[in-house]
Image (cartoon, rainbow, N blue to C red; front, side):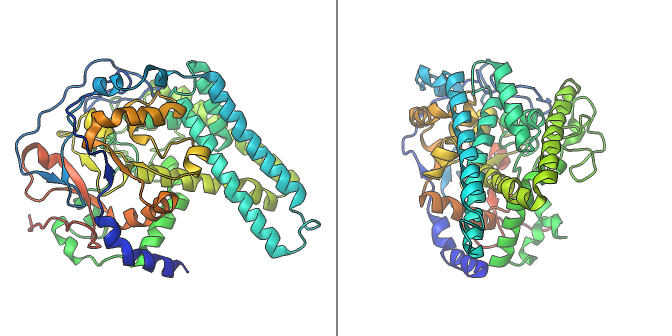
Length: 482
């Protein structure tokens, strides 16, 4: 079945990927100023226990040098963003910035009540006595894990709101609620919050981004024992190979990120306090989200890392006691399979927010905050996205420019900034929820490494786009032996 599905996707891949993403047709020369979104210098460490507003200075913009027009991986013309965050902010209605503790707590209560109600219903009414057929009972409990995974992801997203201080005006309430919710999902809240803040400060920056930071052509080739100009010697991925890579990412991606910083940058030598000397991403290297001495964090943050670890330890203890009392087979169904569903949705959402043939990445010389924040894309997962996932899929571009706008105002704010962003706003809503799921396979196959446009010069040589060895979209650049 998996092979049939993958082959069917492959058969339509070229036609699907040739279509440009949906963008607003208006092109505006507007700009952006960061009351909420800071610009850090390439060599500056940007850790903070808060992910919200940091610097109110106008972000400097670098003027591009004249060069051959850039094209993205679809072959569509790409222009560097030319607006400022001040213009971006000024376009948003004032009430969209208002945060309500009552509204935030309502959504927390709503999701927890739904989770509890689903558990009670299944626990009491899906039993051998009420559903004697084993296959039917198994199918129903499978449905239980899917439902709990969806609303568990909603709880995860609400804790994400807390980390960005968009949950309420109170930092104490935000961090308390965020710590409790994330700890219950085995997420180290403050550890994640700090590294996620660095991701927001360096989105699209190839040397500093903290999540789904793509490989360069050289690194991708070396992974297979080749040099960059030897990409031609690599064979295309079969549909089963692509499915294998995708399943590995979806099942193990989140734990691997927490314990080995997989997909995060690996430039720890530049850590400002010297904590990264000789350290690289990987298991048992000390680069993880649980170690206070990790180069992902500054010394001032180390107590918060321990507090995050304490939250995990409390949840692990509760799970152990429940498993000992009610049986581990029950706990696998009640908690651990829904937990894997949450991990799957989290990785899928983040991957598709930052991975698409239309998106650029930048070297340090070409990057600035406005450009990097725009290296994201909105998608559509209706009705699950708006109701269960609190619109984190549908309004992510806005979120990267102003992360303190609460999710229940994000849709309106997104519509307000589209005329400012013009053709720099990216969305791919084709196919709705089914299109979202298909994009996982399509982008896994088409987005394997990044490289500059062939023949790019000056600043444009620092603007990178996705390429692949699977002959999907625009061919990768030809290179001679260096």
